[in-house]
Image (tube, rainbow, N blue to C red):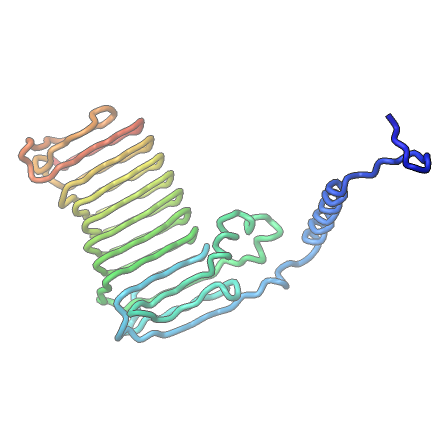
Length: 300
C-alpha cells in the first residue's frame, strides 16, 4: 500500500544506505583490479640488502625466523658468524645479539601476508619478493640451543652442533645435513623435511600432513607423532620409541639388532620384519596406530 506524507504527497522509497555502500565497494574493487592489471607494481616494491659479521665471543644460542625465504645455513671459514640477506622486503628483517643469543627476526605482519596466500595472486606476487638469506656458522662451534622457524621457507641447514635443536618447518621445505644435537624437537606441518646423516639424540618429532624422510640418522629416546603424513627413516635407534600414528604412514628401517627391542601396543596394520626380543629386551617400541600403516624392519 502506498504511503503519503502530511501534505498528501506520495512517499517514494529510497535504496538503503547499506546497499549504496556495497555498490560503491564493488565499483572501487573493479577499478582497483583493472589498475593493478595494467600497472607495473614492481616499482612500488621496496627491497633491501643486509649484511653483518658477528663475533661469537658472547654467543651461546641461535634463534632464526625466516619469512618465505630461500635460506642456506653453512660453515664459515673463520670464527665469525656472517649473514647476507638479499632482496628482502624492506623493514622485514632485523638481527643482533641479546642475552648471549644471536638472532635474525622477522615482522609477524609480513608472515601473515605470506601465509595467507595473498602474495601468490599473480599481479601481487612481484611486490612481495623472496629474500635470499645465507648464514655462515663457525665450523666446530657448539651452541646451547638453536631455534629455527622457517615460516614457509626453502631451507638448507648444514653442520649445526648444539645441546638442543628446535625446528619449526610449517609448510616449507627443509634439508638438514650432518647436524648433531643432544635433544631435538622437529615440527613439520604440511611441508617436507629431508634429514641426512644427523645425530638427533633424544627426539620429539611431530608431523601433520607433510613428509619427513630421514637417511642415515641416529635417534635416542624418541616420541614420534604422525597425523596424515609420512615419516620414513633409515638409521639406528639408541633408546625407546613411542609411535603415535593417525591415518599416515610410518616406515622404519633400522640397523639395530631386533633382539634388543620389545614391541607393545597396537597390532593392527603394524608389520614387523626381523627377529625381535623378549619382554626383557633393553629397548621398547610402543605403537598407537589409528587407520594408518606402521612398518618396522631390523637388519637381522
